[in-house]
Image: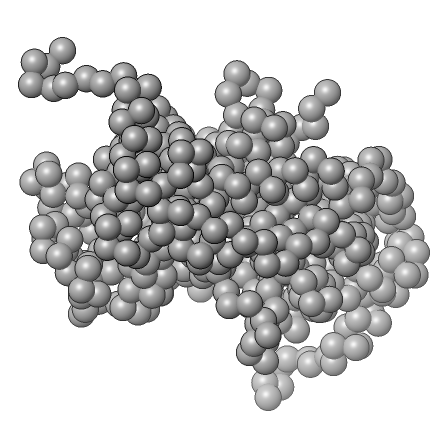
Length: 260
Length: 260
């Protein structure tokens, strides 16, 4: 074991995160729920969505006043099988957990259940919520939008998020079928990894303002935040490899405004 | 207008198809329903799934005894929101229409509805069924499996169908949002077009037994039927452009055996 690395047990990290969340005003039950979602990502090896984001995403946003530590979970509309929830910019991790619990309860009673949330915040690793359904013997599906980072086919301006399409299904193996991936070729976390490794980006991942591929990893990470570069949809740029399909899926999963 | 082309009105083609279906034993109401699905594809410009397939897919399969002209639509299981239907290898176009009608009725009453069919046959253009939901003010989703033609990531043997993922949603435009595409980079119909145009295939569409791209269109069309060539999943071969995502989506949509 590397002597320069400090190893923490998962339950220690969880206790640490819960205490931190409570310190910034997240009520204890909600702090527990949020910490669990983040730990679950690390336990599954999804480092990009685990404790590494505890401070840079969640605490920073609470401190910046973008996200409320206390969640006001508000059911706006409800049918036997569906509900529209307003999360009032509370803790996305907790809002999504409760929203999936509601969907599961409805599915348990009526065969299908689906809930949608408005005014939520970053909900972490999507697989967690689909897996909740699996743990109840059900097929689970979840999606969310994300900040614009993907250019539509034939465009160069970031318009779509890396909107994931995520499923979980019970299987006859010892593990369920789980699929959790973005509708883009790649995502920012992978570019950050390339930056740490000092590697250039390959063709097909990022396009610049002139519509040609960008390879300069470090500057791409800066330019992405300024909308001067964009990720490609799954299938890549243009039509050759079916990029319009990834564009379609990403658009499809982009939550729409409610009809009047 | 090209003097060598005979132009038929849509209602003439529909009458022709209905009469033909009835002649091979499809009951009149079901023949009408099947003809409508095929005409709808041509009207939308989806020539690959319209009248061009009337004889090669539907009549040939009925004559070969693969498909029954008379449909026995059998509800095996039912809950308020779901149903499992056995189509007994009847007319897929008619079975899917009725299955979507059932899903719509359930959604109208309970908020959500979903039906699945076993022992169905080729159901034509998927958009038709999603659009039925849209015409009833609902979001529609449909998928189906297909014969194995796509190699999994890092494989060369065709294992997955071009399983489409198809949605329709009402919009605030004059037309709905419709997305109907295969979970592969391309599909056989496009290769047939390249063959007619005498064009070689580009990199990324088809892989051969040695794992490298094939470009010889005519021979690829032969080899695909012998499992000696395979289409790539959306995202292409390997991992560079996220081909494992298309592989995942295609797998996800592959209907599973019912649990005992």
